Length: 448
Image 1 (cartoon, helix red, strand yellow):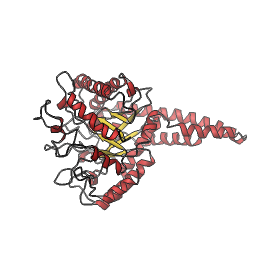
Image 2 (cartoon, one colour):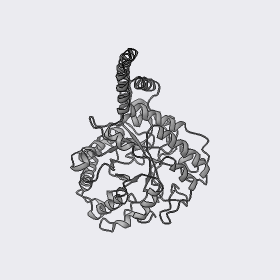
Image 3 (cartoon, helix red, strand yellow):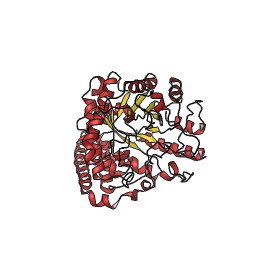
């Protein structure tokens, strides 16, 4: 209990000293030619100074939220101090049973259903630019393969997924865009659902953890006047997906949305605004309720909640709302940091031991979510190829080491791109199954 009390006191101190509005490189927008599909941050997100004047004026609500966290931390710290004093008094009296009890409580602190799943996830890989690929000219009646391959990647095969898993990845995230496969009544085309299930089975059948989501949509933009329609559609999608996968155990994880944001506005990548963050929370909840209302394993399935744009900015993290009394939920965050090295084009090709943004994010995760015993998954991370493998090795070694210390699984964004002017995040050639950057793969494998 002493360690627990000290941790709580530290959390309270951190909350008092770290304010809202921190930025950090996160994500960059899609390009018109569909080659940049990570939907990740622009340069405005590369600094914690990205908070806008609107945010400063608008969010007294956020300050109130911060005060609530402070009060909660202070109360729990006080309780912990009292418990610690009692425990120490008993220990001085020579009671060994108390020490055993303390150890047991510390061991149990993270043993929720969510933590039991997340703790088993080691390193992950995204099947990017594939089931999330889309082209408006392709009809709902066309074969699923037309959408799956329209951004240049081959059809996914069992052999391909086997190659990924054999490298030591044990978590596969499968981004999925549904908009081209839903009719006017929000019914999903059966051929598309069958193909989604087939690809899920490639990894699930090997005992891997599989994450599926709602990706690259344009109907879920977070505005108040769109909240009801977006909530209805998200609930419809997850109701059907939940029914299809109700007999799949908790190795299958549902991520409610990808990077819901105000696309094409000045608010897209800088943390959004109060409206955007509130609508994301409301739409998330509609999807969550649809899943929990379903049968089978959906009652206990891990559900991942993104904040606005899945941003790693402090104000976005603090704004995330989770359901009460559900111990099988997690938070989804994306973090391509430091931005100028990992994502910006041209940016810089040297890492320069620049880990300040990552350190800040991990501290935020600890004080905002781990403090409440809620796990976090970094659903997308990576550093694009700039002919700098040695630098990427140094970067990923630090990144995964620090994340592992915090029990935060990280999932590499692989979009299958190796050449050209797009975001070159590919690390496994899906046609040859070769790994063009063996030293980078080896560094990642240290954390399998």
